[in-house]
Image (cartoon, rainbow, N blue to C red; front, side, top):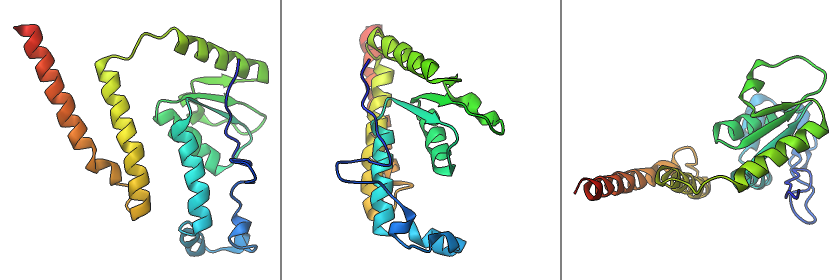
Length: 183
């Protein structure tokens, strides 16, 4: 079984990943306003781009407890985006929302088994249906819109510019298919 792994501590060759201390050695004393303002710092922007690109690229996310708030957001985003999600539990306070994970594991062996089962299921899956292909196009437009909007400072809504065209295209395609099937 082979997997490509994104490690946020070493996301690229000769890159040790994002650290708040690269922006300000006194980051732990920031006020909420300073924290919010720092999110627009070029170092934070570059670190975010590496991490969000990895989430968009991946097929699966494995979260290893204990982890921080960013990892919690990433795991939740991955689950909501339909990525295969695996959680490796550790001792600590129980969390109800881990129920959204596809697999909740107690050891590394279970994690590896879950990934192998996922990989096997993907290898034997039937080709995507037209609806699934449209969903893939919407996801691709979202990714493209995210990057465009990110550069323009409108990341939250950038994908909406492209989605209506895909929606209209999918409706027209469905109408044509119904017409051919009905005639």
